[in-house]
Length: 236
Length: 236
Image (tube, rainbow over all chains, first blue to last red; front, top):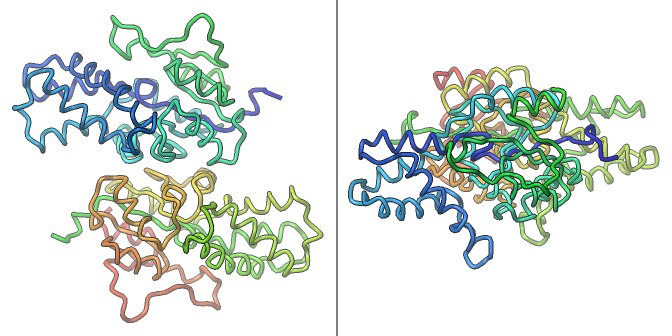
């Protein structure tokens, strides 16, 4: 039963899997000309992401979308880097939108196009809907649908996101495959009954730092070196 | 202030505006070979659409998506046409998915592509998210985003849908234009502060029946004979 031909829908993580958030945010930070190490700033900003979502995930804070969390986190990072007095409100809003202008990895555009020839291909990202749409338009990413944590008002790895995307398409969880560069995301998806494809992105955190990679105990359905490689493995 | 250049996002109604639901459903009904007038069946099915949404809109029924309402309505139409005993459960499910296989009007594909060159272009339809994605994939419709009543758990003309789509993109209502073939939809969008573009679809209900057309008191921002014509008027 549980064969490759059962898979109908591919749901893609976006930050790190589809786009290079670190290099893109670093580029925008350095363009400000404040003498800041852009990559260090990007890392510090991203490190506040999981803690910021925690209150929403635990239900102690009402739903807020990722643009809001990014903006709150930005205030802290600006303090941390001692440049809070150098950016006014408009400049901060614009910098916050750097997350709407992330560049894809080099294999992304072609890989997604190939996958769409055989599967329904959607996002399943903690990024909010507008962010994902703006980012995709700018980067010429082509999706069949934009699905976000915002669609369910729940952040991954909440099971409502994985089961939710299957429900939107009236599919069983086993007919949906999560494609992601992060073992935590894939493990949670597998626990909800989804199929899993690991996509290796060794440069997500730069050359000197390991990401959220699989451990020896992990058994994902596919393991690919790029989205293009996944397309090849899936016969697209 | 309120000039053409303020418009950032075009939100499209789908059934009747973008796709020919009547001709498409009729085609599928006639292909069943039951000797039924397909267009009459399609009309009867569609006529149950507004009354079926009413309970959800009034809040006396919990949210259910349009696939569910279509399926409930189908049971009634099959009775009405005296063919309820000729379709088993699987055949009814498949017929219900005819709404996922609607054909676009002849100007739709090119018109949307032209509009996307200058605007963010999304659906804003009472169709559920999976329906819209499946329909768009089959018909090769290209959107920047799929937004649905299901996104807000509220059916148009509820203001939460019009204000909701603006909110997803962090825009003011006046930066969003609803594009629709139905005056009721456009009037409600205008009441929420959106711009409005009427697209004439004189054949939505067939050659002998008027649709939900503007009255002499209506003042929409644009009035177009097709999506392609709207693109031309908007300089795309």
